[in-house]
Image (tube, rainbow, N blue to C red; front, side):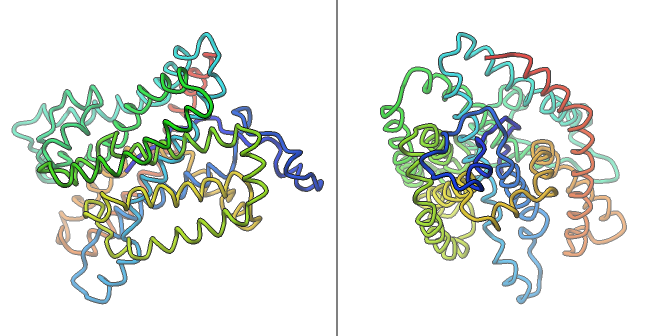
Length: 401
C-alpha cells in the first residue's frame, strides 16, 4: 500500500523521433520538462492492483474452488511496490534536474507540501472525530476498530515506526497511511543525498542501499519480535524499491546509459519476462509478511517493476504503450492519491451499511460492499482532483526551481 504523488515526468519526443527513423543515439536523454503518458498508465495499474487486492483478493470464501481461484491475485498487494519504484523515479528525476538550483530545497518541499498535506490533513481531521465519541462508539454501523497507534504519530507521519514496534496497522481507516509515511521519510533524505553526491558515486550509493535493504529485513526477521511486520512498513526496509526508481532516473539522464537502454530494448523485455516468472512462486507465498517475501520477495518485486518502468519509458512495444496510454487507465493514475487514502474507510463503511440488512461477514456482503466502496472512492477522488487537489497543485508549481 503506497501512494505516488502527481508530478511532472518526461519523455523527450521519443515517439516522434522514432517515427522518423532516428537512430537511438540521436535521441536526447530524459529530463523533467515533459510528461510521460505511459507513467500515468503505470500509476493507474498500481492503484488498480491495490483496489483489486482489498475489494476482491483479500476475501476468504468458504468455497474451495473460489479460494483457489483467488490465489492468482494474491500478489495484487504489491501495487505498493510499483508505487515506490515510480516515486523513486519521478522524485529522483526532479531533484537531479534541479540539483544546481539555489531554490532546490525550498521549491521541492513547497511543492510536496501543497501536493501531499492538504488532502492528508482533511483525512486526518475526519479520522480524529473517532476520539470525540465515547469509547470509540460509531453508532448503528458498529464500533470503530481499535487503534493502538498514537494519534500524534499520524500528525508527525511516523505511524509506520509505531506500527513496526507494535506489529499492527492500528485503525483500519488509516492503515494504508504507513506507505505515505515511508514516502515522506524518503522526501526528507533523498534531496540531501542527491544534492551532495554526484554521478557514479550516487549510483554506487543507490546500489549499496539496494543490496543492504534485504540484509536489514533478514536481520529484523531473525532478531526482532515483529521483524516481518517491521520489514514491510519501515522506510529503510523498502529503500530498495525507492532506490531502484532513483537509479533509473539517473541512468536515463546519462547519455551513455540512455543509448544503451534504447539499443537493448529487446533484452530489457526478455529480462523483465524472466523476472515475471519469479512471480509464480511468490504468488503461492503471497502473504506480504511471509519469510520469503521479507527476505528476497520485496527485492524481486522491485526489480520486476523496475523492468516494467524501463519498458514504459523506452517505448519498447507499441501494444504496451497503447495499453499504458489508455485514457481510463491514465485517469485512474491521476486520481491515485485520493483513491489510495480513501478506499479503505469507504469500503469498510459500505460493508457495514450492507451489514445492517445482510450478514456482515458473508462473502457477498464483503464483495458488494467493497465494489460500492471502490465506486464511491473513485467518485470522491474525481471531485477532489478537480476542485481541491488540482488547484493546490497549481499553487505549488508557482514555486520555481
